[in-house]
Amino acid sequence: MTIDAHDLSGRPIIIGAGIAGMMTALALAPEPVVLLTKAPLGAEASSVLAQGGLAASLGADDSPTLHLADTLAAGDGLCDPATAKRIVEAAPAAIETLERLGVAFDRTTAGMIRLGLEAAHSRRRIVHAAGDATGVELVRALATAVRRTPTITLLEGLEARQLLIEDNAIAGVLAAGSSGDVALMTGRVVLATGGVGGLFHDTTNPLGSFGQGLALAARAGAVLSDLEFVQFHPTALDGPTRPMRLISEAVRGEGAVLIDENGFRFLKDLPGGELATRDAVARGVFRHLAKGHRVFLDARERPGANFAARFPAIAGFCHEVGLNPALEPIPVRPAAHYHMGGIAVDEAGRSSIAGLWACGEVAATGLHGANRLASNSLTEAVVTAGWVAASVAETAARSCRPSMPARIAPRPDASSVRSTVSRALGVERNGDELRDAIAALLSLVSNQDAASDPAAVGLMMAVSAVQRQESRGAHYRKDFAQKAAVARRSFISLDEAIDFARKLTDEFPMQLARSA
Image 1 (cartoon, helix red, strand yellow):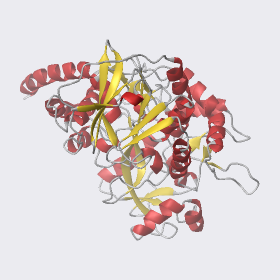
Image 2: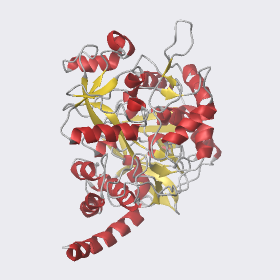
Image 3: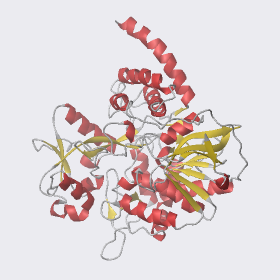
Image 4: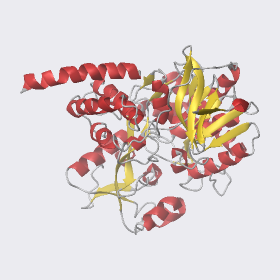
């Protein structure tokens, strides 16, 4: 069934080739490393879609202390303060590292790095490139650096399907590609597979980003954390295109406002207005839409005539649908954008499974808490990639000879779970819909078909959401609208989620009968 790649045996394997994966591979050089990606390098990564940039305290009026305060405030009590402090303090050096790797950040006429403003930031600290095409520029520069680094073996067109375990530790990766299946023996694996937006109908993520890394880790027995916290970006271009086009928060940072079809600025009384935290703005937009209104981002006054110069990519896809954002408002609605939860990791990116690390959006480091501060994600990926690489390099390679499964898992497909996840785990949630989703997803998890892994991820998210009986950050329960007095992070394994779901589905019909 499998082809054993003997020549790569023992090398660290990085699964996922967005910014987190490429930065980890580059930081490991000159140690030989394998970078495995199911698509051409960078082609289907969420990283390439990033518009805003990276948050770093580079301004004369800024400091890591202020950046930390904004991060903790947005995280709504669930950030790990020590981790957040360490990351924001490392952010300025991360910008320098990226420049050395060839990233061309936007600069003023005086030669200083140009800094943008985004929601819930008290200072201008968003470092961007090519106006609103920061992700494109980062992926371009890092992909070039990866291809010219001889110690990085790039395996494109291979999709990781299973982590092999031996004596409760990582022992290899089973992958599938057009030319067959491959078994890569290694005791060191880094997951850098991105988020879960592809589980939702309305998403700014590539549709193939539906939690593959979470499923790989969960099937191997890893502990995951804060899975209920999904950030919905409040301003995705409202239309049929999927993934939805993102209208960067930086547009609001330059003065654009949210209005309805009557021109009413319905969020003007929200503390912070259109630049409040993303969870608050997304809920405001969602509720206004639910009342039957349409919602538009009005950039006609600011940035106005300068829109195309400042945001060329956004102007381009607006023109594709017949809109000129300098002259007419842009129709928008919330869309799943970023997952604050992920694989529970320590300060070095180590998971609960020996030999397994996680980096980027797939990891739950504690930086983002209940609600990510805009543009902290790319910063986190770049900074923590170095820490993960150092930890991997310090871990000795070992000989692995795990037993092979009888069959390799089929290629995962999230299409059959999107309706369930979208309905239950959206901007606003309630217990009845979450319990219905748990029952529906549980029936798919053990089928060993294309829906099994996406359903497993959705199940763990739904169980985490039903267990959090409060509203905090991006997790809003209509039936538990108040915030709990004590903020607690959540931790869960797949076995625990399945056990909870089975007990819940056994009890729930009895509860319904009693209430009838």
